[in-house]
Image 1 (cartoon, rainbow, N blue to C red):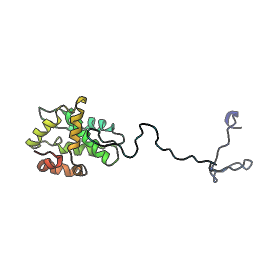
Image 2 (cartoon, one colour):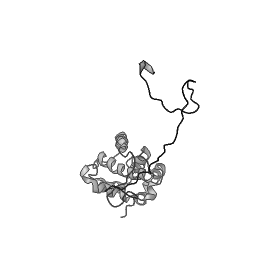
Image 3 (spheres, one colour):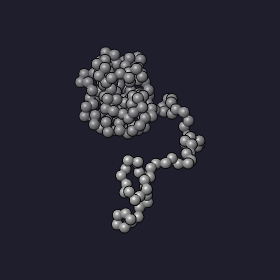
Image 4 (tube, rainbow, N blue to C red):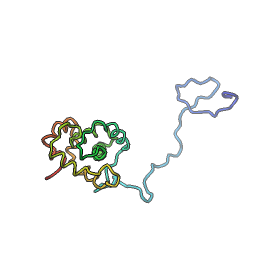
Amino acid sequence: MGWLGVEFPLMAAPRFAPVPPVEPVRSYESPDFVPTGWQPGRPGEIEGRQPAGERLGYQGPDQGYIMTLAHRAHGRVRVTADEQVEDALRGCSLIALRRASMYGRAPSVYDLNLALSLWGYLSDAPPADLVSVRKELFIGVGHVHHYKEGRALADMIPESTLRMTPTDVAAQFATGWRSLTGFAQ
């Protein structure tokens, strides 16, 4: 009899677990039949790698966390009078998600900082030509109906730039922003 007069079924226990001497000692035993592993076979299952291509994005775990990171960064973003903070944050968030997915992990503040530094949004005095280019590229990206423009923005950044550290990008963006962003004149 167990607690409150309720009888509990016998449970398996490790060999080293103390048991009363009147009860038989039980240990783990493998089942007689082990089923085969699961295999994808249903219609619509993705076999192999996730599809990649124009406007398909970059898949990775916990990507919604970028919204929290962007909200926290809102006060640090420096824009000119003709720019919107929401456009800058959404565009840079898409770049940060691409970087995080390259490493197969959730986005981090370092991914977002790299993207914001890359476009001069964390600088007090970004180059004038960079500001004019980013005004054109980021306009309206913060609105949900500008998905295509946001994807193009994330796709244009070279992979070599995304593999750099945020500190290196911040140090090089003032003079080498064209090569870092993949923007060709």
